[in-house]
Image (cartoon, one colour):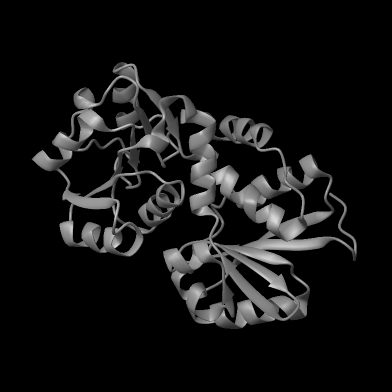
Length: 283
């Protein structure tokens, strides 16, 4: 890598940040697109976030991604928001335009793009779609499904009130919340076109108590935002049922590619980067 005075500087703010795949991913984007850019991980503590953000224009940094735990705090600190960031109340991408800091959120768009890549044949857009969890990742998923015009979204969460609040904010006309687990959840599965896990269940080999995929129709798909391991128990069970499956690695890469395009004006190819990361993760 050759870094010159003209090299575009990009990066990611997080705490911690050493584990992030984003530097490797964006380095591949630059190689794919022929862009003279470098992507730097910045370990930014919460108490230093405002100072770090306001320094971006002075340093000539074109943009940064935002990861845990700064997404909601960054939303409050930037000067402008895109519709997606406003809907989710969180920012994962900051675009520097002169002295302006524009907060965006590409998670939902990355998720929708990956659904189209894996599940277009399942007709997931016709719904219903069942979403497990009601945290930050679920907000991105539900927002994407609503933007895509899915006619019915069912959010299943251990705390019913949290699921109801999410639906009330993002899908008041097309969504409903049920408890996880519950009879209402099992009753929703026979009509579902897609089941999406946004929780951490499966990260360490756990399963969902009381959830059986037997009720899903054969044409349905199952998507798990977890990508390491590549096949969680949920996806393994879905494959045994003959269902189409995908993990969240494609979402990670596609949301990153959208950020990259908004900073540079160049859209990198994502498939080579997904394949490369699969190899790096041993998937």
